[in-house]
Length: 202
Image (cartoon, rainbow, N blue to C red; front, side, top):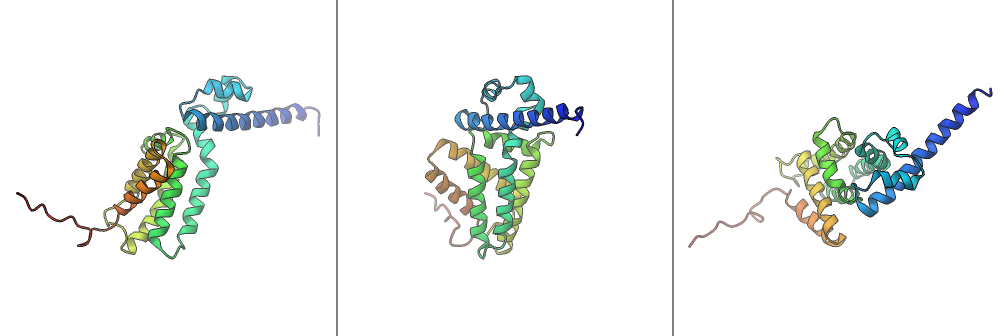
């Protein structure tokens, strides 16, 4: 190894350490204060300048994307595993529950993800597409089994799960899970048993 190469390698290692410290402190700050937590405070706690933070993460959404990368990969893997579940309806419900829990990890995250689904320039757009695609495969399987309304789309599913995630930020987790189950039930096809009776009038 030449002496000329050593400083360059040390810089790469320092940059990596700074990157990881920023991610670790952002994780703490976002869990405590939500996705609008001060990035200046994150940089201070990580022991770097705000310029260094922005050098790694040009926007708040870019920082969120890096923080969510591994957990989104796990969600996609979970969806793949659930495709072999013997009950398509139960598989869809489990994935929806796991996704809602993920999307409510930080206060404000659900709103950021919903807006990013429509914004192709957002760093979070890819993450939203991955989650939507994973859910779509499970939704299609449940629809083929006659367990989901024909008109329900993956975008509908994403919006419902997003709403459930937002609700989880406002209520106890147990109540949030119950409300999500109500939402999932609303995707079921309308039958004679579930159709509301006509108003008999006065």
